[in-house]
Length: 310
Image 1 (cartoon, helix red, strand yellow):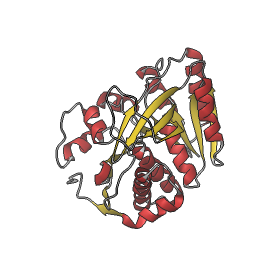
Image 2 (cartoon, helix red, strand yellow):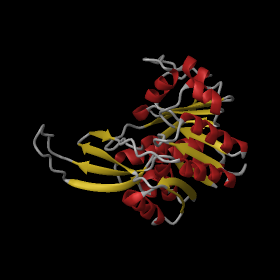
Image 3 (cartoon, one colour):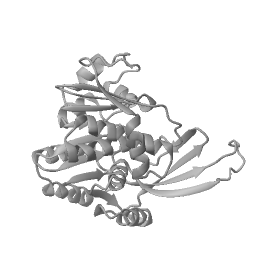
Image 4 (cartoon, one colour):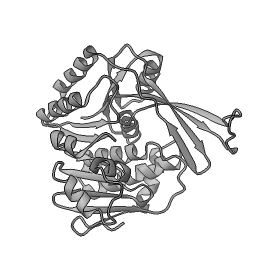
């Protein structure tokens, strides 16, 4: 089973504005869409599109939590495991305009020890046959020490642990040692505390690989790089007209994990992940047919060692 764990779920409100933005004056949206969100939830939604079942473990509360739960329960292949909390889930704003997007994310409301205890109780269900995607930011009240303990509890069950969070640092990575991480270039620079990265990424990837089995590095429009201790692969795609880059990394991770769970083929999984990211970037309505249409446009090739020239 694939489990997604979302510690800080949200309702994302998308506003599309076709006219130039006006300062001070009221801007009228041409359309508005509300979606259940949070990195783990995004992964479960994408897996459902790929016809792959998952269990979405999420901290939910208030009217926004009820909205998130209702949206997830509409999906046939998502089993919702709700951890109830008193606080409301956060609401984020996404502004889409022409070829760009703006995102304003809320922090969320603090949780108490009862919620934390219930979250740790979920780890008892994991087995060595499971894949756990632990994604997104930490909700207030859940400390880094709690996060480390949660990761270690998951690893103790011998489940495959994939981590996708902006909060990663090299010291934290050393403590949790997940099976896979999925940073983008910005998150990699934060992880290593460096203002700039080398063109080849050779030293950076080698340093990170000390504490994880696999790295799936998103390069945005330039594709991605995958490396483990045996191989390094470069994923490229034909240029696309991106309309919405919010959540593309989640689509990449979900597509990769979902396909690998089925086929155990690295190349097929990486191509599927890239196709999911491209389809998601094209618009808000990601369909299976659209994802499949991108597969012939994806190339997966070996790269020499860790020297992945961009």
